[in-house]
Image 1 (spheres, helix red, strand yellow):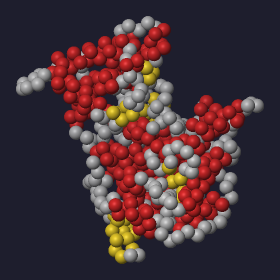
Image 2: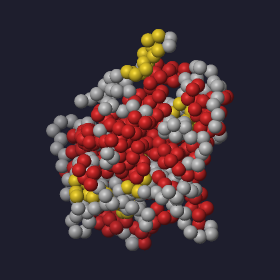
Image 3: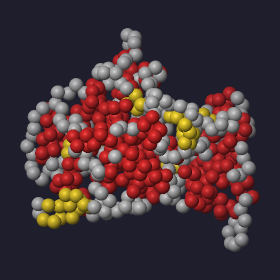
Image 4: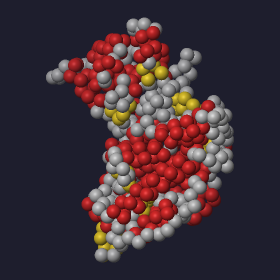
Length: 533
């Protein structure tokens, strides 16, 4: 079965032809992209000016519903800001000494001088104190890349003024060209490589766009068959689109506007042409970046992700708390995408009901050997399923005697099975970080994410309902019956375990203040975040 891509047919593009995992999962999910960078890139597209097929330009978070419905075989492009001056001001002092080119230090001092000239002091303190405070303020928003060159670092995406595209400093080119002033250095900043912002956020954004294009009847039929238990309104893609578009816009305004105003002043308001040179093409038009593609059939997990993001945006949470939960949601969506897409093409004989795989989640301090073994086996089974999926079922491999196996090994290591395991370990979904016996667990952050995205804000559901929703949306199982289904998926037969297999989950929920005991046999999982509207 050939892989159909959205938003356009990508079968003739080099990444599609050369990498079976990119064909399979989209361009691209890559293990060098960190959890915060998945979110950062996703929100960068949300906040940037966008254009479809070089014709329909828009600045809203999502394309209009009419644009989505009529979207056919057209490329999405977006225009990210560079924020070179702001990054230089914020990160140069904390970057590696060997990464500070002479022109960077020179322009940094010029920025400080220009900023000092704009500051008026009417009370105690000095201009240098104000500048130092501002440097510490923006350094406190550092999100990713602390060990990199200053321009390759990123801010936490708490406000539009801190969102920026990836910029790579080409040291060898600077030496070759004998660069000795700031203006000459412009040609040594590369904004097209996608080294750290590796397009994973683009895939997540396109998954949502693709999902919201589906007919209401298709969504409602799938919800009924799969048991994912969405609200009536959430089953209407037009309603979901309108709400999500509005909430994503609000998300970028929850941080005080002063932060954005100061950031934009430092970046482009100090009588400097740097922003103009890097954010615009020579003909004064915005610099657009071509987004990638995702599998067209991934709309189901895309729809679940859209609902997750909407619920997180609506929850009454602190600004930073919401960002970290959204970061975890993006990572879990990457894992769900890998699992779901491989399940569609897996040759496994032991398939179970939607979502077609089961991940047995054990207690972080689990002592029962049988439970740890089944959890470990489901981790290995999913990695094997991804391994098998990219080796057939319509995936076109490069031609040649040695190329196919080399390509497949590279795909396994950086874009497929090892990506799943590596990312899951980064967010604490798989332990241990090193060594054998990898198994699934939940930490406090992931547990809170599951509650906020599956229990209505300010509402309650029974503990059994909570577990059913996690199984239908993420394939997670916790109790003896769930472990039996997981073992059936792995080995084709059930297994019998003690009835208190999920007692640890109740304990974690109770310790976090998310569980209410009504009796010995009935407990309610509560989402205390309420609704911010």
